[in-house]
Amino acid sequence: MQRRSPAGRVRRSLLPGPASPRTAALVSLDSESEALRELREGLSRNPREIPCKYLYDDAGSALFEQITRLPEYFPTAVERALLETRAAGIVESAGGARLTDVVELGSGAASKTVALLDAALAAGGRPRYVAVDISAHALQRTQEILAEARPEIPVEPVLADYTQLVQLPRKPAGGRRLVLFLGGTIGNEEDGPALELLSRWRQHMEPEDLLLLGANLVTDPAAIHLAYNDPQGVTAAFNRNLLRNVNSFARSNFDPLKFDHHAPYVVEKRRIEMWLVAREAMEVDLGRLGSHLKLAAGEGIRTEISRRFMRDEVLRLVDGSGFNPERWIESPDGRFGLALGLARTSLRGL
Image (cartoon, rainbow, N blue to C red; front, top):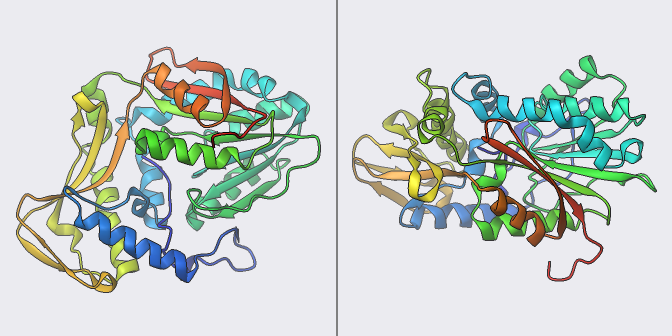
């Protein structure tokens, strides 16, 4: 699962007021047009798809926060434990007191990041935390959590879609930047788009800045399946909420209650596929997309993939996007891995 924003969703209800996060990249008419095109094309494909970034409006972000606390959803707990035990070494590799910026893509509530910030404080630094997220709700939670837990850490919230161009605050001269891309979010992309995304962020970075990439690893298929099919139904609600977000943006009339959540683990592809499956035949008015969508009973719309990786596959992504792989850190149960990459001097080929 990941945290993204529809590139063209006009977030009028979320535009920041005086006490809200600043907006780094407000949606333009051009990007809204692009989002409509992307959505139209996705629904025309076979199989039909809606980009998973539509999962993460404010309601979706709040539901995802609930998911991370479910006992069935082990990735968050495993990753948090790994960060807590290895934070000091990661910060040392990132320059210790020279670490001046910690930038997190899809920050959510930043609950896992506190361990790294604590390690930076213990090393004699006082880094600024730059939280990049598409949900004003998530950014507000981040500010509340860190204001209470670590008031000495300055927080710079950036309301933006990190898959698009984002203007980051300038890094202090002589400092080092650590970019965090955690939660296994890289698994929501095939290799090509994943390399493109990481390469784009490499261009935000200077030589000796670092990337910390988190990835879900291949493990017990039954445990992976249960993580996305919790008996409480929170993940099902999260998946259906995507249609409400699409309705808000496209002025379509999907009825989320007429769809079943379906999220099998596809063993041969080593990935979860999340679907919304029509319970009955229907015709959906797609509003601003300018057409209607006919669905047969049992026909599905794919809303997300979540890949599982082998170690070498993660390191190839790091290397191929302009970073020298420096360290590999794996949880004792082999369920999650962290790759630390050092930004190379040359951007050739990116």
